[in-house]
Length: 171
Image 1 (cartoon, one colour):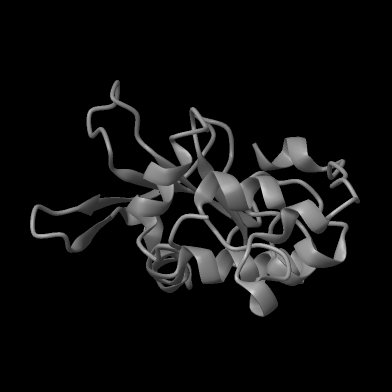
Image 2 (cartoon, one colour):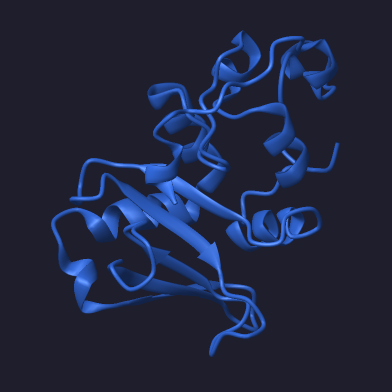
């Protein structure tokens, strides 16, 4: 298992090793869509390698909140857009960008859906971690009974995750 990173850019770069378009979808209660979606801009973008934050609706109907950049000195810079002025949006996005893994765990446990892939969490280890074993591998995160042995416990899971029927609403 790779070392866990708290940097959102390291998290996305790790995921890009196995996922073409990694993203995070965080349930929230501050906007009409009920979610905030965080994606990394591709090489075809005007701003490749930056992180885009939207309300998670389909492109063209979505609300663009901000762009997050990693500066040359390694610090993270957030560029706010007018649509970010909704009540609580700025504070919510700061929490998600500064602590993506912790927020994914909290929201995965609370809403019982993985913030990385949108699949419903059904087994005990996934519900405890806040995400499933495949996403743990893809994003380089600990999963399962890691507290006892420090290993990624996915081999102990026999129960498969079931897709959430509302998953299409997330994308």
